Image (cartoon, rainbow, N blue to C red; front, side, top):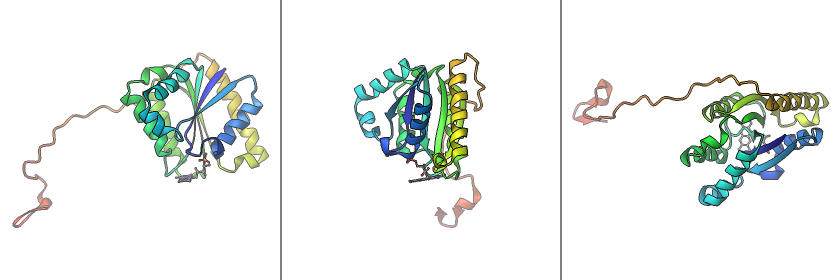
Length: 198
Ligand SMILES: Cc1cc2nc3c(=O)[nH]c(=O)nc-3n(C[C@H](O)[C@H](O)[C@H](O)COP(=O)(O)O)c2cc1C
């Protein structure tokens, strides 16, 4: 299976997260994992249309996508979030449509669930087939039982990616609720004070 790894760490190849990807690649040589350093290259991807399109071409040609990222500030690194914005801004969402995908994070388990929920919702918005997620502690690779757990996840991930099983959509799409902003005198009493409003 040809898997594109979208690396969310601005540290690029030296990132902790990529060591987990390297561990998976080493233990599953039957699969090819090719990494694209998204956050590290985000300024370039933002400005250079050809570079962005080249990433989309890689994703289009892949059998599956692995979102591999650290948790930063209760979410994903800003550059990763910007990349996701660019996908929608540039109307490139169709490239991801139907692709099997999984999420791998490293963190100290502080609000890692918000990062996972966010990425799962993005996968749902992109109509991807989300097969699973894994939240590793940044020091897990140093522990034999955790390495075993990671390998078990990876085995299941590859099996599910290769299967044709439909995925369960977890997050409904955001629907624009409409509404018009008409600030003609505030209807909220506490914003009105003698002599004017604040
Ligand atoms: C700026 C910054 C913010 C972080 N924020 C969080 C956080 O909110 N929650 C958490 O569990 N870990 C947080 N961490 C820890 C990282 O997720 C952890 O060190 C991760 O393994 C780093 O991966 P990387 O080397 O691939 O970037 C943060 C680390 C940094 C540098």
